[in-house]
Length: 95
Length: 234
Image (tube, each protein chain N blue to C red):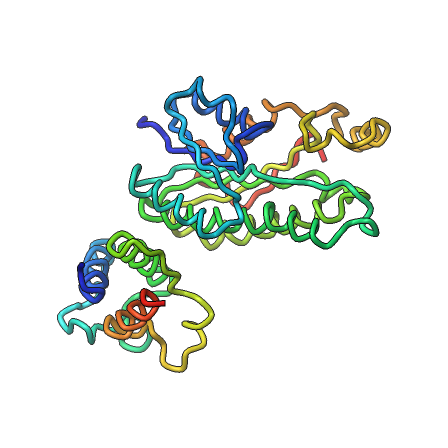
């Protein structure tokens, strides 16, 4: 099965096609998705998260909800970088 | 124009059935759902049905996953499924309250959320929710039904703003009583009084509702969102 980080990066690349100010994915797992140093506005970020949810469901056959209460209340946002989001998704997939 | 993909909830009978038949006859691809299978769908081989409760999140998300994979898009969602319970609030069991909010309000929210996830990909979508004249008329005996639908009005107005950037419009139609199962238990004298409070004193017809929905989902209605249209001049 495809690695979660790879899925996220593919979705970011796909989404980049719609953007003037693109997310630079050259840093791989360190790529900033949201927050300081990120280029996505909140609406773009919501749409990207939906794309990622769907791509993960397609690959792993399990629907995960990325924006649950737990994610919102974590001290270190799981949405910060590709790496943190990937770790978070893996945890959800194991639940 | 390529065939529209239209999802309608509560298609087993009543308005939902009439809507499904209407859009199937126009050549649209119609997907429906209800808790049990409809008995009319054999006449329409293209019709696809999902047997589910609209407030069952797992089943609902699974259904949307299947729709996304099969069609790759969803043009229209019509949140028709609804239940009512006509009773004085002093005689309304709490379980009934929960059931009505689950189907009417939570189900509508769930379907809006999942539909918008698919629609945003194509930057196009039309969502039509179901309000009711029972809310503005403040009908006694319908406190919970009217409250669950008042919440849908609020949802419609706010989701219209949240989804506007995605090219999705969200509107609601507020039917008057139509002679369906939903109003069958209401005494005739009460119904007559109710009709008197409308500007046009007659029962609604399926066609009245279909006409409003046709308008909301037209491509040309891309500047119409967050609106609740009450029938009968309420």
